[in-house]
Length: 151
Image 1: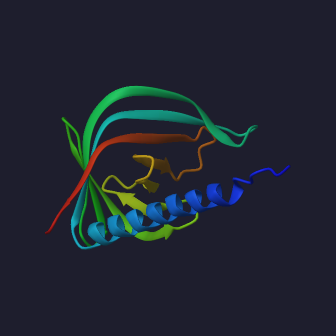
Image 2: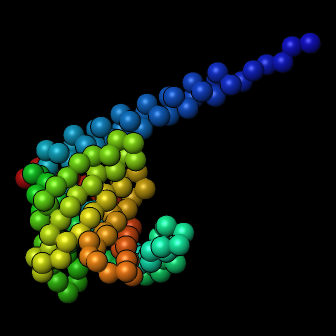
Image 3: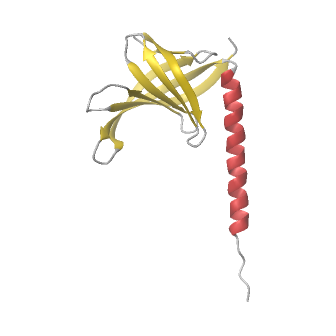
């Protein structure tokens, strides 16, 4: 009596999906690298750091319409809401291939420092204030739509 081993087929399917995802992310990176990028958001969450569990939790969600624009050189984020426009100047950036996210250290026009994580795969822009406060809160903007335009 013989048993079929479906493992190789499963691995092949998984490799194909991973390859497709890598190709998609590379195309997105190329497109965003040569044009200004826009991220339309319709919700945001405030998540509190739990120092005991070492993770963000207790996230409170609310409707919040806003637009982020990242210029073609990736040096400035402009965040537009109904009531105001804020500028975040990029001081450092990199792509984390393992987590498949873009990361940015930014300084706001009001003098605050943040760590931005642009997670295209999960449609999130996470903003972590870089301060010495013990009550660390992360803001998660839920991306409704993404697009780019040549500048």
